[in-house]
Image (cartoon, rainbow, N blue to C red; front, top):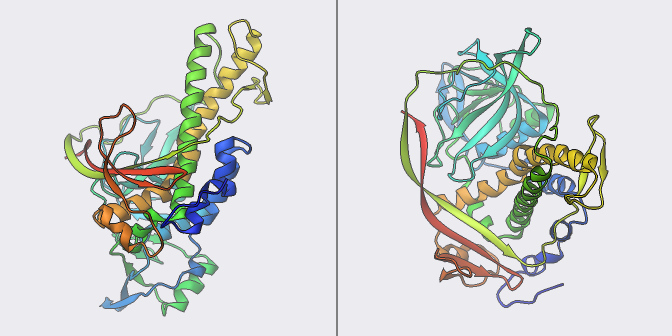
Length: 407
């Protein structure tokens, strides 16, 4: 299925035939397998990067460099891929903290392994999800242990680097994001003239401005298609779950580790609402078919397919489907979705910072159809900018979003 459209590069014209997109649309392979392949395409391998690092001077005898064309998003993605330990020292939360089952026992020594980079769906903020060993968790049996997942905001709701995240050091230094480089990373820094130095690198950008052009490229469109397929599966599974719950309102759900509620980590912090600009984008494609969603999970965690889901289906099948749907929805929402959405939102942030105008398509460097403005979906009331690729449309608009942050 190849669409030949005027003024479109070949990789974009043939996007529906891209193996990842094709399998995602048809549901012929599990989304987690496809997202894993897509994530590897975005893997931040520093060994393949040749950014320019600029020497800024010295502070207490230690050289200071600027990130040049290296961006913090690339570094965080590399740290997450390796599960590396980072130190952020003391940290001021951007959001109001929620009640949790953990207590921060070392507020000046926040540190832990990077799990993944997480992007916000509504505004252009980014977090590093870290297994924070400065947090002590009270377990159900009354014992305590160190380590709990915590989000550390690296980019604020306006798309700007937050204090403490613009300076990165390969050795611990107060007020910097610090980490011990791997052998490959050490070789990378050595190749940039940083060998043997406890160097501090100052980043000007979370995402390199050049990434904004990627909004019109096939790599972005592939990741965007997968992200939207993840959302579609989650939405459809949620509808099936609601339907099944009407038949079996008291069916059991997956056993989750119950832990006593703890105190809020910062209970006295006040909040304020702010209005921030952002870019919203969506990809409209035909040919999407739901993957097989009718699976069931036994109390022991064994997954099996089931033939149908109806009010007269075996009660065991309905109960086990609900158990599966609950776990699968959580996985799509908190693991798979964020994994594929981080690079998508990184491109959209760079595009937003560049102005997000339709005229930007002319600067992409490859053949892109001429965007139109004022496009409305059927029965829609929102005006969008639109790129018509023949096989589908990429829509985007600039909007203002209200969100809550700390005073």
